[in-house]
Image (cartoon, rainbow, N blue to C red; front, top):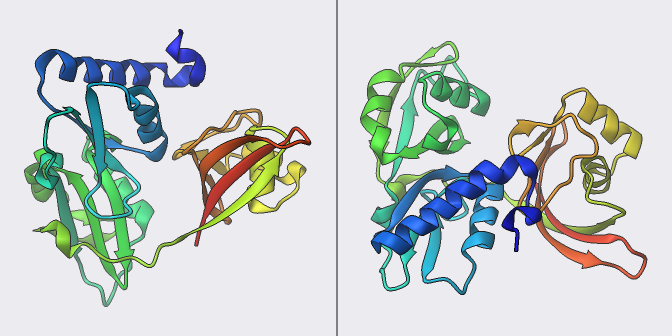
Length: 257
């Protein structure tokens, strides 16, 4: 069976990487830790590893409910501990009286350090507190080199994971039906806008799927995709539950509140 037929063409490189990780554990009997994965990548890992294999996989991103998480592949006899995931929490210290810091500014400054997105986990902001997670391997580099965010001069301090911010973020679950899994169709159904509007938003570059701008209205969505529509928030496809009697797809999704 061709494993690629179940996934998008642009996901092939990641699928090959997952197969390599799985083979590594099967051949060495030793665990293999990945960088942070987005929800769609986590879903691909789950689908490939499955439940029949001698290789298992767990995920952890630093706190319960994390969106971006590291995957740990391990032999079925291995006992997983939280410290195996090697996640570091940082808090940003800055002049709160005079400045505000936004999520996109934090991400932009982290990316300017020259490391790939997979080295960073979730960014948490609440009541002027700003935190972010990294892979532990880069904590010294980040501590030395992250000196500003936006126009703010900052410093960072390492914290234990249990000191992470408890955010008020919630995902409100709902369900809908759609005539297809095309991006324009799902945007229309999930965000309650017309198909014309959804197509326009996509063509104008206002829509992201898994944090990447997608301008193809016919892009086919899948389980665990996170859809972002500028000015309307985010939605995550929880499951695609087959077709109704009227030949429409039944979709369960979460809206970010």
